[in-house]
Length: 229
Image 1 (spheres, rainbow, N blue to C red):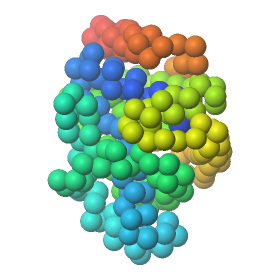
Image 2 (cartoon, one colour):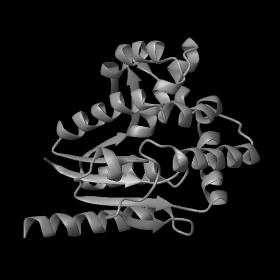
Image 3 (tube, rainbow, N blue to C red):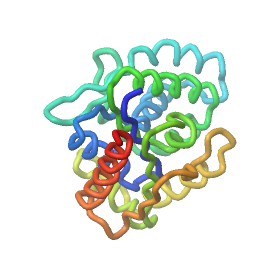
Image 4 (cartoon, rainbow, N blue to C red):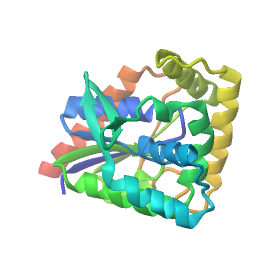
């Protein structure tokens, strides 16, 4: 097993940006698991598949899970389904409002968790971010982090991210969406959002992205050194 870094936390805590930065500095692979759940949500909405319709949902999962792939395009990681780049489509507010419902489905989690574990085992090193990476997906990760931040700060970060991508969201609506998603993620029966017992908890509210990346990288390098001793 290669060196594994698990980064968990609620929506807008900066997990994906930090994970990408850490992977780049350590020169290991990065997997955005949230994008995987968003891709299933996007296609379920597109095809009118309800999370409660097990038969249709399993058919959809069979069709797409093996086709999910991550590729670097102009220095940025993009999620592809076959030859379709879904990176922008999966960030819409409609997908954001529905992704927690899809992500709470046991069938969806079964398919995607196995895909995530397969990806982690196929590389010599990986940084993976999500909501249950340290508690469920990569139980034996070499180092685990749980990033958090205030609701206001998380909503502002998500707002800025969407504006850069050409969307025009309402900050108030985003805050409500994130608050509802937090509640659903924390209260779901299957792999609820919570820090792993051995996770390092970082509140990023007053930290820049660069500062968080530096802290995570330093702790990863310390763990790597300890592993070699």
